[in-house]
Length: 62
Image (cartoon, rainbow, N blue to C red; front, top):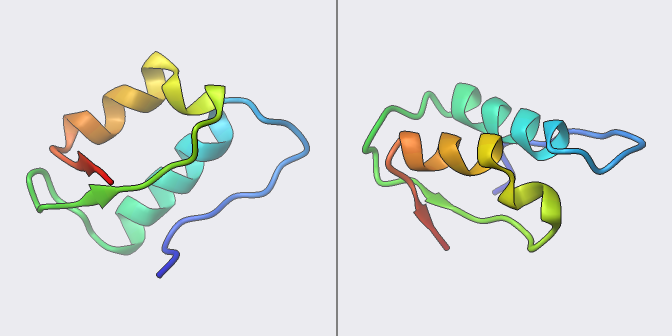
């Protein structure tokens, strides 16, 4: 199930970060809730800002 999404005319880090934040808010995800996080392999997904957020809530990569 897709629970977070965003649309933009660029591929900056803010795009997947906003989608992640939407998903966390919509599902009321709390720290260490067992979240499994899936993302593509684009460069915007490896930024420090983006990688710190999932690890900060204790999620695991898919």
